[in-house]
Picture 1 (cartoon, helix red, strand yellow):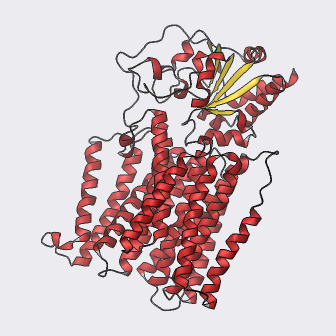
Picture 2 (tube, rainbow, N blue to C red):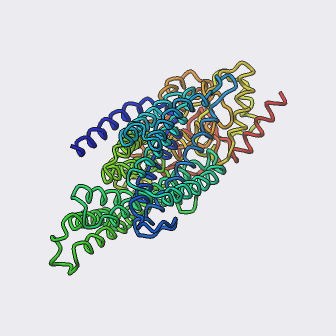
Picture 3 (cartoon, rainbow, N blue to C red):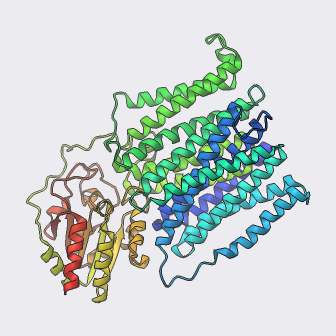
Length: 607
């Protein structure tokens, strides 16, 4: 009956998560990933429970058993994720706040939350009601708040409330866990140990979050994903070491899956961090027999699962005792899944990192889910389903926006084909026409309807503040100026929206691709800053192009187009020059985007 109830709560939470995630505004996809990443730090629940079950009774706050050590690792890493994740989310959402927005009165949220926690405390200390029932009720409130947190990201006006509900949900979950620790007979030193680990982890997370801006956001989220993966692995190992020989088949499967998913998430996130931070080359790794390597590693993990569940299957092959064989199988999956995650992510090029980040976000949720089934904890199963479906939906949205096959992405094949010239691909006649800053300013002054299309180059050049001032000056002249954002502009979903919000660009002039694409024909001038493939006409015109079929912003339909580039000859993922550069209505403004935009701003100020 407990298993059926657990599956039921998992399914219901998954359905609820599926519904609310679709309602999240595309501009808030980056905060969505940050807040779900923070919530995935609920792996702390498993670590805290291990602290209460894994202690040998010595009364020391120093871990004194393998299970206890694993619990300590999981707890500390999880709190780094929780603290850092929520602080980064709050920083991002504060960027969307405008002077005319109504005040937030988050202190009033403390009243019902305080009543809930006071009731839990009264039950634990004063024996008011059945503690297990009260703890379960607080756990339900935790799951509801986490679902409501994502629902709050439906628009910029309610997004900060959503983040606060996420914080409240995690706080309820951790409070309910302390009650469960008490029910399990945890001593005072165990609570002291949990408090020390939580404090240290939260402090580290806060320090890490303090130096993160919109440009560093993608690699930071990837780094935090790796912590969730390691915490899930530690929690699974601790559960096995603390109960070896007394685990049923269902729990053994959950332990193995939590280790497998955690391993793939941990190393995959590390590679993604390295590529996004520029520490690793963005080029896709293309080893001979790539797919066979992946299948071989997956086959090893499946064989290890069979051995882990029923060691007698391999008793004649490996002369080891049942528990020794199980321990070896767990070590095998930890190592092989780590290699698999490394190879899968390394086999994807830097241009596909927006999709990789969403896949890893989903993986962190499924790792949490597996831990929930492992512990028989409905809260972890519910929250894990919420995050897993959230990441999966974002992955699907990103794949559609990039013209990628979602199965290929999951299997590490999205970026492995090197961009080369394809026989039969369109060849461009003529030369790109260049212009100077004076000519650009003249066209801006002549135009009445202007659309600005930013790309990752804007983020790299840190030109958002100059662009925001340019827009302000042009609008003061009575011109209609808007931004058009491609879903995968930047290195993670919604990164360009956050970047523009940092520069105080009003979000009512920032439009998604499907909202603005039909307006280019009536646009006098389109200014493309640091974007390439997302505005390439080859995606619609050239069937032999590698990005053919990818939805793009049709900037070439404007009366005039100015494309800012560092130099001619540089290519995007397609491995070819953007055809719009050779169109009669397009001019190229060469130079660093930051310096160019600063000069344009200065010229407009002098007018």
